[in-house]
Amino acid sequence: MTGLDFVLDRSVTIAARRETVFRYFTDSERFAAWWGAGSRIEPRPGGAVEIRFPNAIVAGGEVLEIAPPERIVFSYGFASGQPIPKGASRVTIRLEETARGTLVKLVHELPNAEVRDEHVQGWRYQLAVFANVVAREAHADAGSLADRFFACWGETDAAQRRAALAALAAPDLSRQCQGTALVDWTVAGPDGSERAKGTHVFELTPDGRVARVTGLWG
Image 1 (cartoon, rainbow, N blue to C red):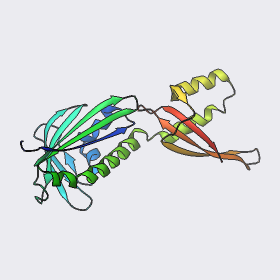
Image 2 (cartoon, helix red, strand yellow; image 1 turned 90 degrees about the horizontal axis):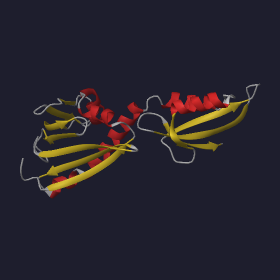
Image 3 (spheres, rainbow, N blue to C red; image 1 turned 90 degrees about the vertical axis):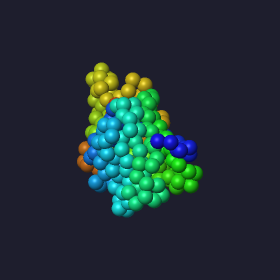
Image 4 (tube, helix red, strand yellow; image 1 turned 120 degrees about the vertical axis):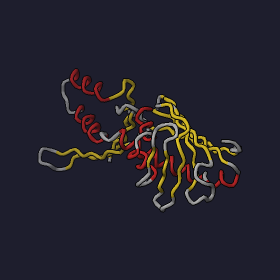
């Protein structure tokens, strides 16, 4: 594929393991979750890539290279032929492990500057959707994790409390940082009346443990 001299670069960090993120390029149900119902991918060289946007626009191409869980390359264009025909550009996605999770690096090579510029907002939106969809699966147990965290502070035995925290929190757990999950809480007295309330902000590690917690009293 030649003549693709105009490049669009985008990146996003997702708090999930690289293997979890890469499944969204190899499993059609997950692929459709961030593109649109009916989208599909065949995870092999020469395999079909079909994207069905919610507004009924159809795009796609074929898988050119795939090296799980690090890299996938596919051609891309539109079934209508506008602004470029199906398969007339190239998308390369690389996944890099970081302390915060997975850094997704996207490079979209296109035939001219006008078409490149048309995709700037589209990729910005699509990668934001992608990050949210992956994070929802990776941290589907966040509610239960928060419940377990709060339950630790009701444990009067210090050794048992430390053991319970060690099972659900990262070793360098901090309590003063912005997080990614908001959890409202209340404390009730023996008669059931509300004694206190507030919100905790949880930031989770890629493997689903608590990294940081910020407690806010209401």
